[in-house]
Structure formats: C-alpha cells, structure tokens
Image (cartoon, rainbow, N blue to C red):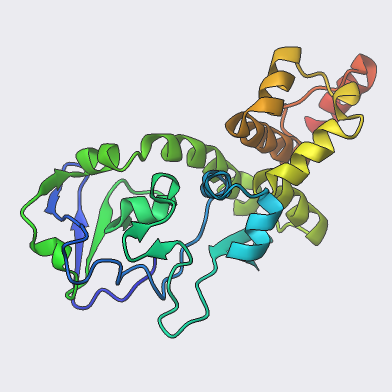
Length: 257
C-alpha cells in the first residue's frame, strides 16, 4: 500500500513492537482507505471475488486496473472510485464491506515489508492517523495472527516463487502470449477452470483423479494448480506429466539441456 506518511517511517525487526489500533470511534476512521495504490495478489482476487459473488472475469473488469511490469509480468491494481477522494470501492461509513476478505496490503497496514529479501518491516506512521495514539501494543507476529495473514502468506509465497524466478533474474521477459497465460492461470481463475474442464486437458496431462476433483471444487486448489501450470509452461519445470509416457520422456530429456 503506497501512501504519503508524513515525516515518520520506522524500521522494525521481526521482534519489534509497535502501538496501533484502528476503530470506528476515531475521527479519521476510513480516511486512509482512499487515493492509494493497492496491488492485488492472485489470492487477494480469489478471496475478494468470492466475497462479492462475482466471477473472476467480472471482478477483474469492474474493480481492477491491469498493468504490465518490466519483465512482462501482469500486475493488478485495485480500482478506486472516480470521486473527489478516490475512495476504495468497498469502504462504507461502517468500515470495509468485505473486511473478512480484504487484501493482504490492507491487513498488514500500517506495516509493509522493507524488501522482498529482508525480514524487517517498515511502519509508515502517517501523522494524521489517530490509530498510532492508541495504547494497544503488538509484536509483528501478534499483528499478523490477529489480521489472518498466515493463509495469505502461504498462498502468496507460491506466487512469489514465480515472480522472483531465476528466469527473470537472467533478464528474460514474457511475451504477450505468456503474459496472458500467467494472468489467466493466476488471476482469471474462472476462465482457467473452463480451460481445464472444457478442453481435453486432463486427457493429455497425467493428473490424479482426487486432485482433479479438488481443483474442480476448491478455489485455493485451483489457484495452486494454476501455479503448477505456469511453472510447467513458462519455466519448463517438472510440475506436470503427459499421459503419453514416450512423449513425456522425450519432453523431460529435452528440458535438461
């Protein structure tokens, strides 16, 4: 979450403590939920579109802005309202309309990682935020537990392994076709599900029946399978097998060179 924090930006170690509490009795309640850039992870989109009762395609069209990173990686930003304050589309006078399924960045606020490599966190202490004057004290672990971060970190780690892959460290870039493949398999999950179950995909790829059933019924399993598909297609990793054993052996041998 990018925001102007005034003069104070503090570095916290994993063992660090801080004071903060946001609630509807504060005069600044909901003020921070406007005019911010919130980059959504695939798991964010999965949770949010389910909360809204929308297909992934509908949610992405109505509530997000698609961007493209330097490596050809698709980026998804939450679309703010087109009003004077550029408010979040889910904020109400009583709070967040989808609070139980709010994005990772909103859950972690006022903390955000110092970098993708370091365990330290930065705390953006916006001077106008009265939440920092509350006496409630947290460790980082206590905050993450209270905000339900664990499942988000688990699912986001799998995506991070894709976006920080050696493929990109070697200055490779995705072409438009591969970028769309990644976007569909990770963000537009309902479209990806159609691809899996309305084509001969499972006649071609050797996937266990129980996994197929879980992918069909569970959004998190579908997303995890999307990550496998991306790694197989983009990086040539051994995350899927063909049913044609002869051709599969040829393909696996070819990928070793």
